[in-house]
Image 1 (cartoon, helix red, strand yellow):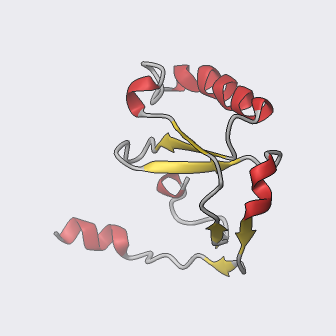
Image 2: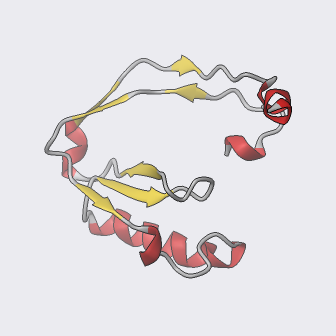
Image 3: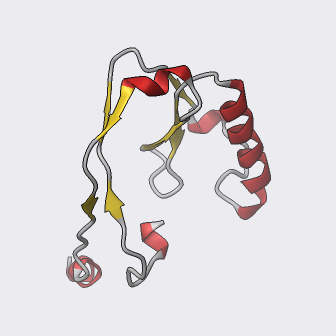
Length: 108
């Protein structure tokens, strides 16, 4: 989302989540993703998988490969899952971005 928000038009916030060790986690590896998961054509299959995961309550958290950096993961949280009670949210804080970062990267 941040990659496509040039310049930052929205006001984003960070909300820390503290997880207890017994929160269930399912990990979806990139090799298990649909072949076109990075393309617009893969959107329907990904949304169907996410909706199924949500209603089946298979886990409280789902780790999915990042489309921006596929070696990293994004974490989805299912608030309907019974383990959700083992997640506490901290205080929200403004996300401060270095708007000169793009210029800094070109200088490297």
